Image (cartoon, rainbow, N blue to C red; front, top):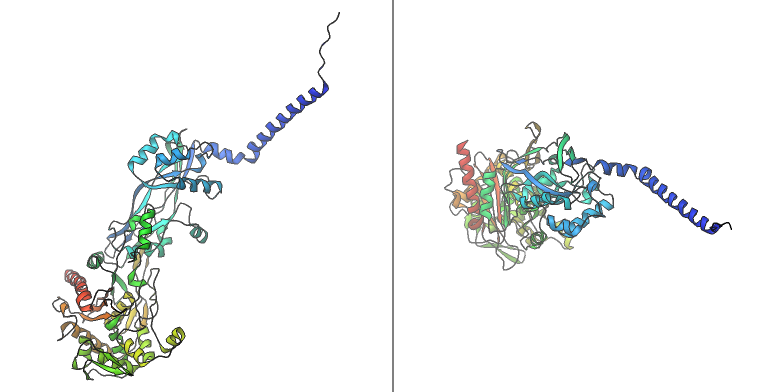
Length: 589
């Protein structure tokens, strides 16, 4: 009997055929997805396994003092980075990566989030650790097989060789923010930009142009040979107007105090010294500042990151009497020989305004030299508040100077209109009396009061203060020179300036002068002390303005120390150290 073959049901054939067709469709679809839709991506991924394209960061331009001494430069640094083209988010072990490199998990997570959001190009490394030490670099290289996509870059690191010196002028650098990337199209995601000071104002000039490198690597990502290199172009060099020697003396004199010192060349407006205390070290930011240190900086009650030379304003006290004297002479309210009797003060309205002592009969020269309040109450009342404010504005008060630094404030130069709008009150004679001796609503920055000294030294001509003298290419070629620019000019007879100069010299060399400590200096000095009250029970702010040599002014300065006492006792000794050093420089020229 013939044996019959088993018959497979038609339904099973259909299911089997359907399964085969489905698998074929899935297979072909996957091939289409990989070859056509993601072909370019995986092609780049495959090529990146043997060729690596890396952006090489350009060194920031150097910053020098007026004599060529280095204020800011760069040093080689090893940075640990994540290379997106070689990094697999599926196979990576985040905990192991963070442990080997020594970074918080948050840092790696932020980098991975940028990759997932397509915020970084495939071949641009994301820096995870800046300024890695030798031990960390060695550990990463030795265990590279555990760290696919993690590479070591040798890049320039910003360095400030003098530490805290001139920190408020130089500023510091930090990682670029998303806001900066949107605002400035030339920036890259891995850039570091200037955050304050000259680093911020001249960031575009200092940035330079990044280079590119094509490197052949092995299966582990270790470099084998460099195939092509487009070198980075360093940024421009800033030659500043600062004198590093004088700057160091000024900052040393301010140690342990809150205050500021500004010194300028009155003939050009070049800033020779700009010191602010307390201060900070800009090197703290070059590798990314530690959170606890940043919190300390921004919460410290003395505000060490605030540039007190341009960002704080206080009543200038008796240093303002120079302005009152110029106004009174210019408007014919007093002559050099006008004499008045100081019996310890004078009545204004219903109040008795005291003088700090009884001066007896004094003329204008003695009134300036001995800082007689009574004399200047009378002058201020004779001139009037509007004219007094007008002359003060021409001498640099009440508006920003335009110095090439961020954060400058304009202070307060009050008028009857200003008081009416601000406080809805009328102006009284007592307001004028207070203003005439640098008190009341009036406030000025140390830089502004240095300009007051410049205006007298330069017979009414004030140049805009500036900190950059030249911009040079990296090979030393001069690209731009900064020329002096007149900020204000007061057309007044020479009698006005000569009389005020004599009064300021009387403060140093006259009997009863408030700055006689300077009388033994090898150069002639003209100066004016000040002690400004600001709150009841607190010590006064100590002020001093001066210029030298008195017959040929080449330096004008302002010293201000907060809540320290009298200007003659606190500010004058500080100024003496700077003027002594400047005199030595004049002799050695």
